[in-house]
Image (cartoon, rainbow, N blue to C red; front, top):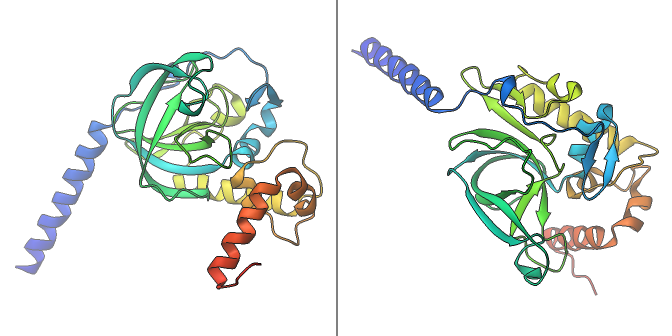
Length: 252
């Protein structure tokens, strides 16, 4: 009886697993959107060479996470910098709801977030997609609450799918240095992210910007700690306050 039950559960597991993979979109290289820039762009007008794109995606992000797309996306016209600047320039965006499964770098306490694509040359994900995303919090003002997230890079460079049926990495970007991760297991991809953060933690110089994911990797023993604390005082003040509250220390 126990053997028959185990066989039944095994078949059920295989059937439901296949059904889940069958409902998810399988990406092919032809679906990568065109992007003519010769260098990756992080933020507004900040360029990095292709060979530095992956590590810069990580370090410049506020959070790197794995999530599942919950809907087909809603296209709307709204202020480019969010509701806090409702009198600012307008643009067409596509907003998706994303269920957070795993936070790989930085922090995100929400179980579900809003992901917005601003750029017409970004590959649009499908409902049910499992994605690995490098994201920036919006608005980018420390005093304001996070309303939504956008990809760190203003193109496809910071969006990856976990492609069925083998659940391996598929880069949305056309860049060869990012396509090199195609077919990699998610566990190995996570290790690459950790290695990039370790490299930043021990680096003596770094010429690009950093987000909360990168800044969180720095310790007081990191060579770049004092330099980046000068660049981003609000982050380190908040981090110190959070650490003090966690340890039960009262700051006066």
